[in-house]
Image 1 (cartoon, rainbow, N blue to C red):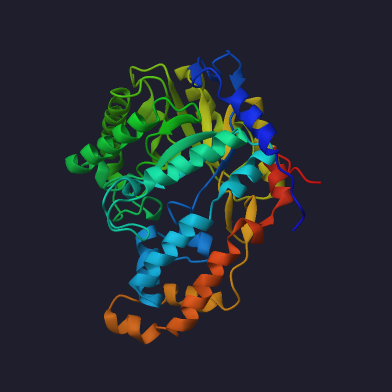
Image 2 (tube, rainbow, N blue to C red):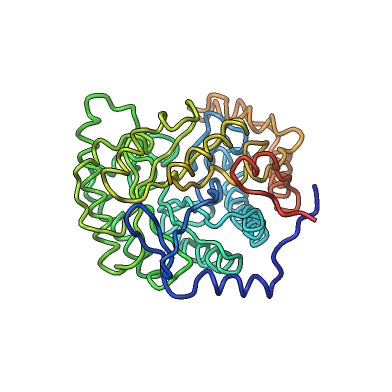
Length: 411
């Protein structure tokens, strides 16, 4: 891996003071602007997998949600080891070095996907009470401030589930849209987050929920989309009860791609940004014409919260399209196994045994026992994964970084 240079400590302090002097970023028409009135164009990446694990970033396929991954780890190596694994994973997967590296590439923003359970006493990622969500975000805010980066807080996994698929760690249905208890918890968590960070200039904004209402629900989809508008308004009201200054980011249903249900919806707030996502398809303006038209009609900024997992050529072309059409962006993801990211790590030799277990039928206790590999070996492989994903052992994907419109700063 090539040596990397980062902004010096003293230079970083001066840079961060310039970035965060004078107040929060705001919405002005179709742009985000600094307190000095200058246009701020989001360019950055997503810290996917850190606080909301996804199976494919570990080389898994069927075992693809946080809950499913944790169950597999408990079966492979025991619940005590699984808890320790997650604590070490959170400590090592994203560190100050990672944030400095992202800044050194010319990014100005990081989007943090998080699981709502991090702000509860529910069992999640090695803790069964007194979750460490605020501790993790506080550290990230400090690192971002020192690096001169802004931070978007994205509730990727909402109470009850907002999507109905693995990405929200749900039970295959967006129960948030119909559960009053989940809706109340959703609002309570956002209110507590907004109350804590209402004066924090590093925070660019709060993204209410990620990719609500998937495309799998047939005749129910229109009803769920209507319920989504209600939930979004509730979340916005909860935030505004304690924080009237920060931007609130609103995504559309069906993978952040269908803005029809949001047409003519008055959220009663001028400081909002709309979020779209894009994976695949032609890399042309016509391919996102509905996003552009909605932005023009709403008069509010449009932000591509997720894009990526394509060829370098496709990504570079789409970056040009987004810039030409004033749609800012954060690529997905920053780090994972293999390629198609800014920083890749290798899976340990022998990891195929771990992956094979996650693919095996484990619907009964006898099936779990039948497919169980050697536990000591599994712990060794998991330990090695934790080592491999550390910043010092990752490899930068230079052509990918360039395709994002960024450039790795090297000696």
